[in-house]
Length: 264
Ligand code: PEP
Image 1 (spheres, protein in one colour):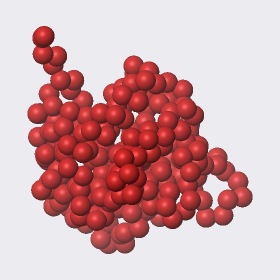
Image 2 (image 1 turned 180 degrees about the vertical axis):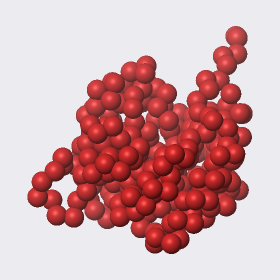
Image 3 (image 1 turned 90 degrees about the vertical axis):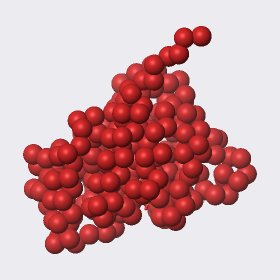
Image 4 (image 1 turned 135 degrees about the vertical axis):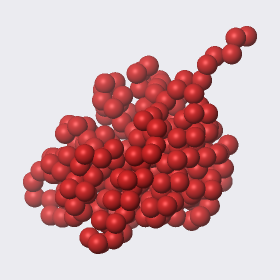
C-alpha cells in the first residue's frame, strides 16, 4: 500500500488567561508575547483570550502584531436586558478574532448546556469571531468509558446548529476536565485518540469541516507540548496557567513550530 503523505495543517496556540491579570502586568506580558512570536515561523498562529475589561488594552498593545486576541465567553443573546452579559458584537468592536465558548468552567460553574454553547458559537460566527468550542469529559466519565459519548454529544450539539460553511470556521478544543489546572495532562496517546474521534465527527458534517483546527488543552507545559503537538490530529493547544508566564507560553509556541515541521 502506498504511504499517504500526512496532511499539513498550521499550528495554533491560544492562551486562556481565565480571571487573571491587571493593567500593569498585562502590558508586560502582552508586549513580551508580541515580541517573542516574531521569531516563529509563519505556519504557527498565536492568540490570547483575555478578560473582557482588558480587550481595549490588548487591542492597543497587540494591534499590528502577529498575535490575535479574543474573549473567554460571549452571551447566547444578541443584545438586550441581560445584566452582566457581554455580547459577541461588543467583543468584535475591539477587533477580536476569537471567543472561547463552552469552557468546562462555564459548563460546571454557570450551568451552560451544550445547546447554550451552540447558541454562543452562532453569535460569535455572526460577527466574524472564531468560536473556540471546548469539549471534554470528567474523570468519572473517562473511567466509566464514556469519553467518546460525552465529547461526541458536546460537539454534535454545536455542529447541529451550524451550516457546513459555518462549521468550517470554528476551532475545537479538547480539554479533559481532569487535566485542566491539575498539572496532570492527558498522555499524547490519550489526546490523539480523542482528537482522531473528533476529527471523524467533524468530517461527517462535511469534507470542508474535517480540517478545522483541533486544539488540546489541559496542563500543557513547555515539557509536554512538543510531544502533544507531534500527534497527527493535534493542531495546537489552548493554554491556561502557562499562558500567564511569557517564557512558558513562548516555549509552548516554539514547540508548536517544531510540531508543524514534524506533521509536514
Ligand atoms: C484552560 O483553562 O483552558 C486550560 C487548559 O488550563 P490549564 O492549561 O491551566 O490546564
